[in-house]
Length: 431
Image (cartoon, rainbow, N blue to C red; front, side, top):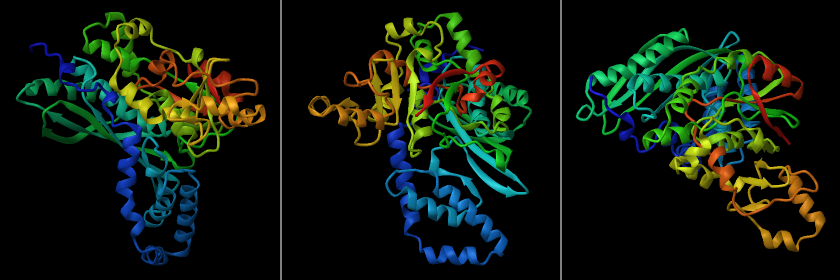
């Protein structure tokens, strides 16, 4: 078979082709806005037709949904409506979580997710492996076990022959087999650019579901894979990537996050997500959003794939990096005093538009400045520096990952276990 560079057909490689976080929020909010207009009396009547025990169970689930802390305009009310319509839906749109979770009774819940993207590597078999690993990760990030998967394939047959698509499916099937599940079917369409991924169904004990936004103050943050996948992927597209770096990155992208299943059984693990297209800082922001907490990440503590500095110097920066920062940069602050990034600065707080209100800070009293810094989780005596996040930090921590590692918020007492038994790296804390 003739060698074809799949990445030449990718406007954005892997999870780097995702819609930006800000645009996605707008899309989801608009899609849900009509639900709030439904007659609440009709929804109440629906629940009243159920037996008392079922109504009590559903009321409890609705309460948990409403406690998600989502502060997006209008979404809190929509959560109530969704909970009344579908009370068995334990996790849905309300929390920007990795997958949907539906209570099927008997202490069990079904996990449902889908993920697909354009090629991040040239080899079709490896493209299939990466896409499958990435899709399965959403189930593991919720703490569940995958049951089966179906394929999602968009293929330009006028540009790429059918056997190439067959290699993509072969790679995906190999990963599914390794995960102990069947690739049980799917759907394909003719399209202008190659797209592939999976829809995955999983299962979990209802009591073990790990959401992404249930962090607790004092938790430590851990990461299970180094960052830099988007940068290496861009180097591949430009023909600048070295073989050893490509090999290591491929190993990372095809390593299943199966540790999520074991982590779900640990009560000291309070929240979990996987780091993909929105970058480390974007997914960390989802974890603290609406919790009343912020996160402080030590820049020097974050593990990176070897060779990243070289590729940054060669301008191998995915477009998704800048889209990510433009979406949530105003919720970040940088403390040069200890080289940390503060994630979750309140809207309208001490940052505006990704820059510091320098004049205001200079004219404010020391006490007022301390209060502002405290609200952003910055220790007393430290000050925010500069305008936007330094490029040296932004280009690494906003880098879109494909099939990245798990980001875990856990009690400090679990630090040794996570580092020794799970190979996780402590990168920060919840404030």
